[in-house]
Structure formats: C-alpha cells, structure tokens
Length: 155
Ligand SMILES: Cc1cn([C@H]2C[C@H](O)[C@@H](COP(=O)(O)OP(=O)(O)O[C@H]3O[C@@H](C)C(=O)[C@@H](O)[C@H]3O)O2)c(=O)[nH]c1=O
Image 1 (cartoon, helix red, strand yellow):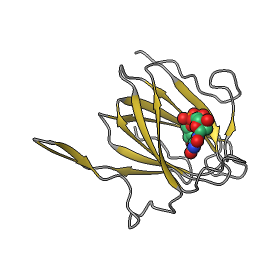
Image 2 (tube, rainbow, N blue to C red):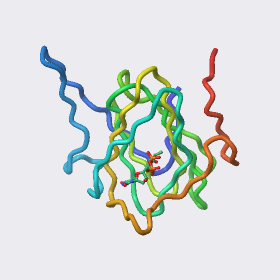
Image 3 (tube, helix red, strand yellow):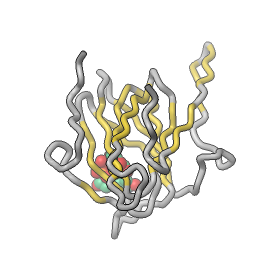
Image 4 (cartoon, rainbow, N blue to C red):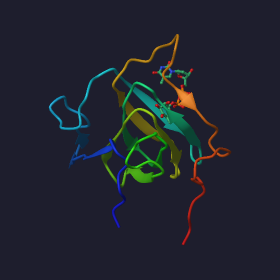
C-alpha cells in the first residue's frame, strides 16, 4: 500500500537511459515541478551498515538521489501544526529505485546503507552550506524519542 507522504515531501521518478556505453540519468532541472532553488550540490556516502541520522534543517530543503548502492531514507514529521505530524515515511532508493526525494525544512531525516557496497548519495540543497553557522540540527541515530527502529525488518 502506498504510504501517505509527509506534508511538503515530494518524489520525482527519475528516468535511466542505458546504452552500450553506460547510462545517463537526469536528476533535477530548474523547470521541474519539484524545483525550488539552488544552493549547492554535494556527495555524501555511507559504508555498508552505516546509518546517518537524525538530522533536520531550519532553512534548507534537501533533494536526495542515491546514485549507487541501496539505502533506506526515513523521515519523521514532528512539526507543530503539520497535517501529517507524527508520520514516518520510508523510501528505498538507489540501484533498484531511481527517485529524487525532496525534504522540507524541520522534518527529521536520515538514511541507512542497506546494500553491500558504499552508497553514493547526491544532495542538491536549496542553500549553500554555512561554515560559521551550519543549518544542521541533530539527534543520535539510535537513542532518541523518534518512533523508528533502523534494524532490518525480516519477514
Ligand atoms: C553538508 C556539508 C558538510 N560539510 C562538512 C561538515 C563536516 O566536517 C563534514 C561532514 O558533514 P556531515 O556530518 O554534515 O555529513 P553527513 O552526515 O553526510 O550530512 C548529511 O547527512 C544527511 C543525513 C543529511 O540529512 C544531510 O543534510 C547532511 O546533513 O563535511 C561541508 O564542508 N560542506 C557541506 O556542505
């Protein structure tokens, strides 16, 4: 069943164009419906099993694309007054699912490498990183009040 998206979260399905030389995949265009603003682009990676969480930003939107490996990206909405307050979203992104996910400010988020290779994640953020005062707010990955367990759910 499709999950109910947290208010302000957007998903863009990406198209992979393969040929005998390799592949090409557009990620974000300024004429996309989901495009807001350009700040900078950076690469963040995770070794197998690593979780990078929990983070939120007060100003910037994140636009995540996993360009190698497989990750689960998890969001938690704790915003006062949000129509989706209390909602958790889970996305499985990467080699088997080419999507860009837009995360609005003040939404908790993080990701875990669930594959067997280093995962490469491109983030196209709406603000440039401020070295003096980073727009980064954090909680520990595993001991916190967020109702999410990063462990794999076998079934
Ligand atoms: C984001 C960023 C970090 N840095 C530095 C700060 C630090 O020394 C080093 C590593 O940064 P971080 O610990 O923030 O890296 P990382 O934990 O990969 O950060 C990312 O995690 C995911 C879950 C997110 O939500 C992203 O928004 C971002 O916070 O890189 C820059 O120099 N420029 C940048 O644009």
